[in-house]
Image 1 (cartoon, one colour):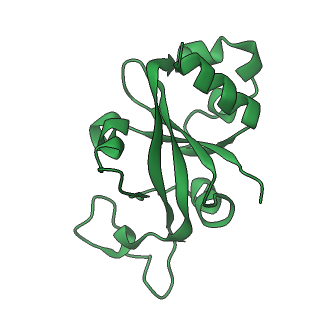
Image 2 (cartoon, helix red, strand yellow):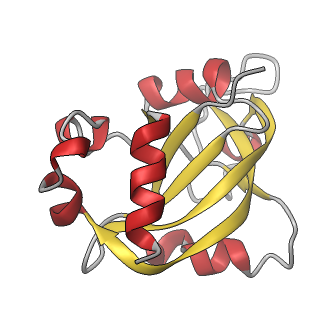
Length: 155
């Protein structure tokens, strides 16, 4: 089965890469996504074994900070039907889930942040979804984009 590559965004004040790493090698649910395009990727496309660039958004600077592995395929996001969660959606139920999540595990911590400015100024990355639609919280990347960002982060 082919490995696919993704970029997921989180505001570090909500859930940082350090939070993910602090899970003592445990697995974290990537929940709370409330965008239909991103939901479709989580539900239908992202699979166990896929690789992820972890990106801090709304930070100074915003940028890629590490990588993770997907360890569980998409499944219903139970936080949607929990009224006490940070992102409930009463339209979503156990019988008819609307939102999905995957489980991820931290892998590689970059030596430095690969900033959005740097990504946008790198010609080999000019076709990235991040460059063209930076608002999407879950997005595909190519293997070459993934490899280049990892190399940049390890400089």
